[in-house]
Amino acid sequence: MGPLGFGIYIHIPYCLQKCLYCDFVTIDLQRRSSTPPPDEYVSCLLTELDLRAEDIRSALSSELPLTSIYFGGGTPSLLAAKDILAVLNKIATLGFSRAPNCEITIEINPGTIDAEKLDLYLASGVNRFSVGAQTFRDDFLRACGREHTSQMTRETLRLLSGRNLNFSFDLLFGLPHQNLNDLSDDLSELIAFSPPHVSLYNLTVPQNHPMNRGRATDEVQSQMFEVIETELQAVGLRRYEISNFSKTGFESRHNCLYWQGLPYWGVGIAAHSFLPEVGPFGSRFSNPSSTKVWMNQISGASLLQDESPLRFWENLPKAQVERLFLHEALTDFFHTHLRQTRGFSWQEFRTTLQSFQVENTYIQKIICLAQTRADELKRTKLIVANDGRIRLTPTGYVLANAVFLKFTFLPDELRF
Ligand code: SF4
Image 1 (cartoon, rainbow, N blue to C red):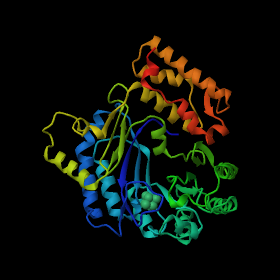
Image 2: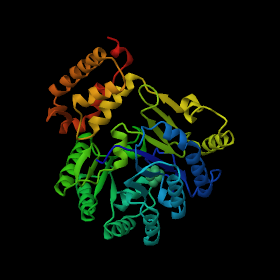
Image 3: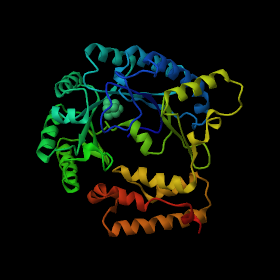
Image 4: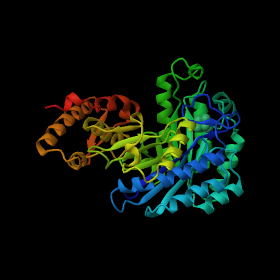
């Protein structure tokens, strides 16, 4: 999984279309009217990086290296390679110590990259590509509202696998009118490209959404999940998180930061950050999802630079900052650890509580409470303890929400 570290997430909101099921904060490039062109957006990203880097550095444990930079979106591969390079060059000047094998990922959509652009990305230091392929069926792609075709996906995957590059394949399933055979066809084709990493997305849309019509039953969708797991494990793609599979050593270092409670800094509209060392139990903060509000916030801060003794999150509107309470930090611990196949040990839980500087007698009471809940989940066979670690069972993966609900703590429950 790689050493302890921290990561920077850069949000690039532009897309060629607005897919029918998408609830990310994006800008449809073809319908863009009042939103800024990419050049202006990138220039604001560079300002944000400059303005806030020192505060971020001050909130990190010393010597914590930068282990991941992630360009997500949106469709970051719509940006010219020079823009990606400008962001990476800026980050290089900010004084973070970069781990030698820092993972630099860019999300790309088929049809938005060719050999020349790929060369430029590689030359700028990008070393991992996350491909928004979804499915090889053109009719399903159209039903999702996607612009790309399966032929474009094949070309992109040929380009990446032909050069033996590190890439991930996004597989979307549970689509309207998709059956188990359709899914098997997708799996056979994706496996032929030998991706080092696969991320699964079970289509999630509101109850009354048009894409909810004609979908397989919940039972068949659970079977789809099982088929995917079996087929991927058979070719050495091991599950390491509920929805993520990889060859050994190719786990997403960036996503592992999220699941291991490590710090990350989100830059750009709607980007989220987590700083475990800010406040007694860590803090989260976010940027506005409106480009205009975000740009005003950054340019306002730019004018006030050096005048405020406060760190930037102390100047943000309350709605953008969340200082965690103990019950939220505990809930996060269980939810993030149980997502991963490595699970957790009670010793890790104790160490986390000790890092919060909670009294020993109180720690013991919290552990007893959590163990009582774990015992109930063991009885219903949703989790299992072996090798000193607690993990989800195969049924637990399917019913993970029930496990997470049980491991959600309320403030009153911690008043002993
Ligand atoms: S390409 Fe991805 S981010 Fe963009 S609209 Fe479609 S699903 Fe959303």
